[in-house]
Length: 489
Image (cartoon, rainbow, N blue to C red; front, side, top):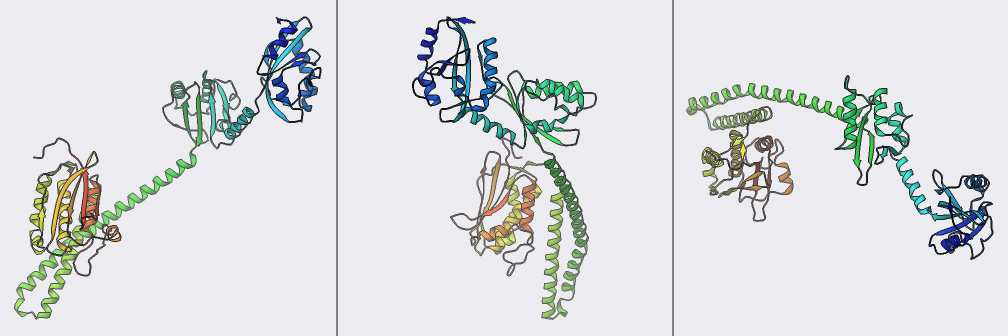
């Protein structure tokens, strides 16, 4: 025990900015400083000679006598608040949380103790709020200190690991919790790999690199997310994701079922379309022969009926071809290769030369085309649909501008801009819907062309759409993955 004089102790506490008090072995106050009088709400000199218990809440005073007597018999420097919550009582009866450090000294007047008293009520309220927040979490919370020992956890954490509840205690090393859990079957390790599982899990805990998921003995699925703290230690959250996983399984089962049904429907469509194609072609040819063979013997009305029948059958044939094309796009896997876009556009224009002349169309082509990757026969179908639509639906004379430009870092945009009447927002939204036709009252069609375009471009990794530029007209576009530094042969 340190030795000093009573006067030195008096000088020490008088000059201290902290609240300090000197007490003798009988529990009488020998001296207090101004900071302590202010803290407890007393006037100067009012506490001199009073019993120490006056500064304690009444409910603690009886027990405090025994604590004081034991301390004086085993006097040592220590924090009085270790392992317990301490409270002071102000003159008006207000209680507040305190932290007390005790320092015994041997003097000429016997053993005296001076104590430093700190108001920790704000800290205590903060700690209580933090504790309540941690306990109120639906997830299991645990904090392991810099020595990897359990320092903080909530009740929910224990509920996740009922088989190791007896070892989930403050101060238990993580590896003890883990090892005990593996041995008792709390953590399901692969058969014959307990030691490897222990080492892997311990390594991940000490250097976490993302969330991990575990199946528990009761078939619950737990997600563990841990983070290392800058000042040392590891904080972790345990979340029960069993319901989430069950929903995922249900959704996957529904997706698989829908995929199977769609495949069956596509196969059915393909079969029906393929079955109809041959008799439709034969019927069209039969009517063509009939009109040529009986041309002189048919009346004007009969010729009209014959032309209507041919037009109807030809339109039906186009629908069948479109359905077959959609079926092929959905089921066929193709390799994306560099495309000679200039050649594809020229070929599409060659096939549509008759329609271009009827529309009195002029086509402005770019000097060069940016390169993209795709499946040439399918991309050619895109150009045929876009160009034929502009020739059919725009009022003559039709003016078209074709071009390409970069779309982000990895895509190329291709477009056909016309000088037709700008489409409304509602019309643009309907345009790619199957069997939707905006001009069904004056132009024949089946409403599947742009659906085919959208399906093709999507299958090749791009998007298709239409926009209305400020300059007027409409711009039909599609994007495709770009090709860098690959020559087009």
